[in-house]
Length: 335
Image 1: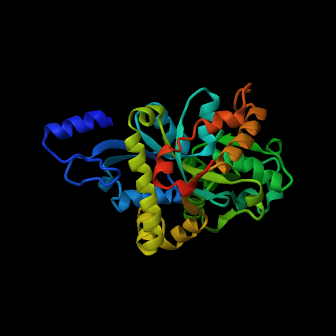
Image 2: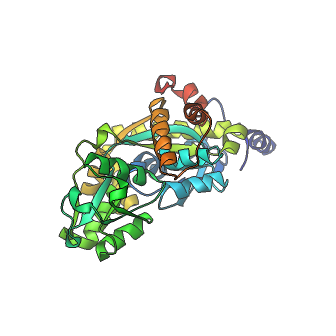
Image 3: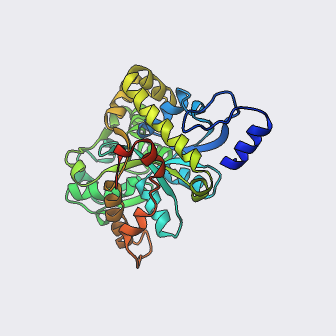
């Protein structure tokens, strides 16, 4: 990956205009190639629109998209430096930090309390939350779905000890529920659409009322440490693009809806429902740290993560890289 110095030297040698003047990027030069590892689901609307509306290139980024079925896998690509940026949630990010790694949060672009859900098969004897006692529920252990399931069960008077949690990726859990190998799954809205497409009226979505009081997913844009320290101008360009994507969604909702429907292979009606579950706003605030601390304490208690002897709040605060957003939109930073 080119850093600022290399890019400026190569541009000067070619006799071209310098590509960076603040953030008014010229389109007359070869943009810097970067890879963005992207997860699946309507929650990633801001980044999907940035891709489809071709918003990266005017800001000097030649983006290649690497597609993954879960935020944890996308984050692994960033941590292994096979991608510069990724879309993920707070769950895999905090677990990586507890393992001594340092993913850097550069933007929190959407939040949702209802994008995750529990979908169940009526044929397997599940029609209410109480019916899940003693049943098999698929989710990705150590993910946002896992913590969501814990909170959702609590909401309905159950605990993880009352069910059998089966570790699966999104597409696997959909197929397993439709086949009857598991009774339900805890994952995202897009997976529920796929399950109902395959299983018809047998697949139902169980009640979610009240979940927003005890759970929220933060959909975040994460860089690796190398990108942040060696190429901060790339982070600035990426964050600028996210702001432009947010503005595009607000001013061109029909076009944005079409882009996301095409990317997720869902109908525009289902896509609209998925997008309506989101609070879309590019920002950085202390709420994400609060959520990570609470979830980390749970993960340690559940032995998903090793005990941490330090200050969890200080650890997660250190992951946030606010410089780019502070420069571009200081009104969106409140840490």
